[in-house]
Length: 313
Image (cartoon, rainbow, N blue to C red; front, top):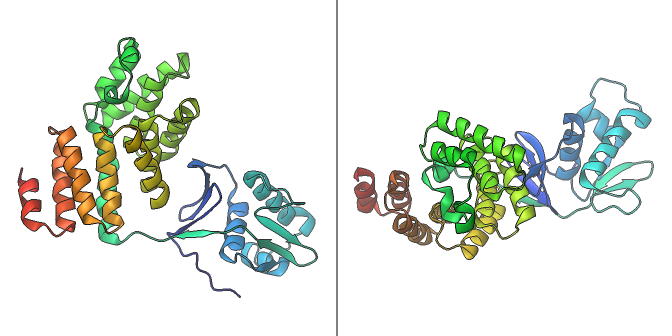
């Protein structure tokens, strides 16, 4: 049997898909795909033995141990559900090849995502509230700023209060606006941020993706999607790509500098992490969160005196 390189708390990426083993889930471009547990477990089995035939007996032994399974029943249904989720064609597959009378083989190129270092994972977790103190108005066109509805104005005010109860109330107002105006970019980015702060990562990702479908160059939506990739999926490559694009589009986004500083630290580039945190502090000098996280960044970069100064401040 091939060595299982797909360990718990890791993930693999193939094409536009990301398969996370703990908790078990499949994502396409950051959006979670609704796939039942048994097909997900089968997909994990196939992916972890990528390039090798997984026989019918192997599948039954691992997924249906001690039970009788009809190959024309549960197994074939699970394979069809996986192919439907991946958009794969059995006659010309990109992901799962049928090996007649033997089993199946996962044929797509996979990329493993390893577990974060423990100490740095704690720092990245603290970054979950990066957007809390940043005004949505900083990325909203002036013409839209002048025409915000009462729902949006109330929602943005509550979002700026940096309180969990306020985030939930803010999201309710943003949702009310979206019920009337589904393509409001101001309400979509606000709802995405509120969801992010509530750690409702699926909802944050969906709202950000909806906004990107309307405007692929929306820097704020790219930053939210990247932040979800970092916090929910532990996919540092996608996170870095999205947040870097956000900064290319708008170099004045303090929260994007804040996010990418954490990623730079995880990439073992402490000098770049410190530079981006200084940019975040320049752009948002009143932020207590930026000041505090500047202390953590400096600490992990080995600048202990500076770390102490920032944390004391």
